[in-house]
Image (cartoon, rainbow, N blue to C red; front, side, top):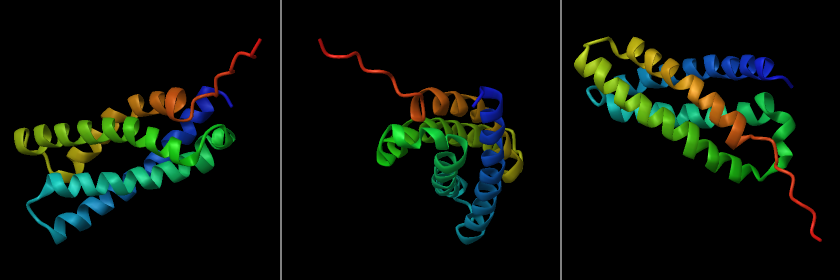
Length: 137
């Protein structure tokens, strides 16, 4: 599959993930008001799990057999998860506490900022093409 088509699939999953994240954040913010960073982190983890499942079965489905599902999940969390977590929490602090933006628009901006980095990591490392092993002597 070419990179542009995969980028489109990645963004489709991402749009659905945004709905999951913002919906989760809105619910969590009502349940535990005032703790927007904790609510943001929980909403992000729910979204990471959602997006991982869709990326395995849709975005990078032809690469599913190249490594263990657990290995891909670990790499997804170490890359996309850490970029999203660090990026979201840092940007949420700046945008909500510093710039006084409303919670959900601030989170939407944070998501967009992390998107391109996450695609590149998914394409090259998490679901990257399997490297050929040199043949033994």
